[in-house]
Length: 59
Image 1 (cartoon, rainbow, N blue to C red):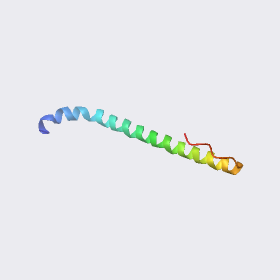
Image 2 (image 1 turned 135 degrees about the horizontal axis):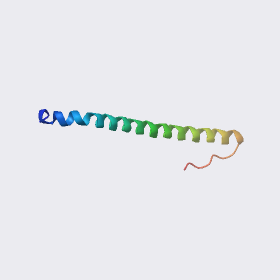
Image 3 (image 1 turned 90 degrees about the horizontal axis):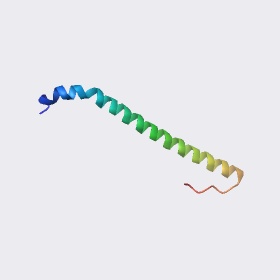
Image 4 (image 1 turned 30 degrees about the vertical axis):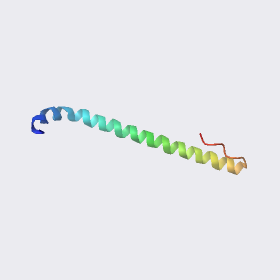
């Protein structure tokens, strides 16, 4: 089964590699944005706590 598809697979390898790179980059970007958002919320909470104000409700 694989033997007959080797030539097609070999042609598709660059596309698959690029797809994998794009996917990994997209996941890394999402994780980075999520962590950044979490850190921002924590900083806001700490700032409000220091100022003695109630913490705004989480969105």
